[in-house]
Length: 211
Image (cartoon, rainbow, N blue to C red):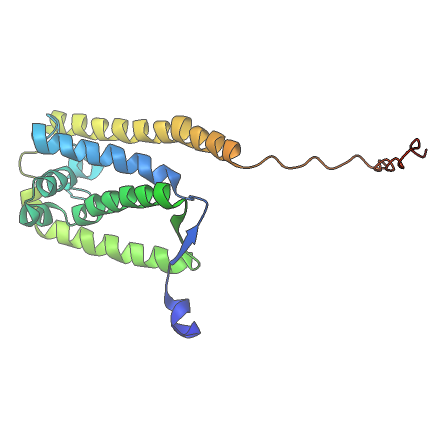
């Protein structure tokens, strides 16, 4: 790959001894567990809503739980109809766990960095805009079964509570544990000698050390 083409690539991959994305494995496990539970036991009794649903609008995340449930059950067509984002979330979570397993076996980790974050953000904005337009094109289907205003408010509150709980677990449990593990894995740094201190002379064979 030429230098000019390499500059256009928004992300770079590296094969390192340090895992720089430890928090993703927790989110992947929790997400796949929630998806498997919905596939087996069904959707939550209260639908999760964003505040936009209260004014009759849809957002890029609308239909996400139904899409994940359908994809976990093997119904790709229904999943795509509800929300194509499921084809990023579910396979992405599986890849995170595969990366974790490979890292544990090899002792090295695939890390991703963005040398050009502006390009990554621009692509993300375009992807969200396209997804939003797709969701708006069949908003009637997505809004089917929303229930009355009280159920929509309850769904919005439940979504906010779940997001806050996940953020709290990430900040209060996962990140401190990762920091403690990282400190324990790194070798202790040698303490530099105090200023003015020097090594004592080696004693000569058969005689006392020089002072």
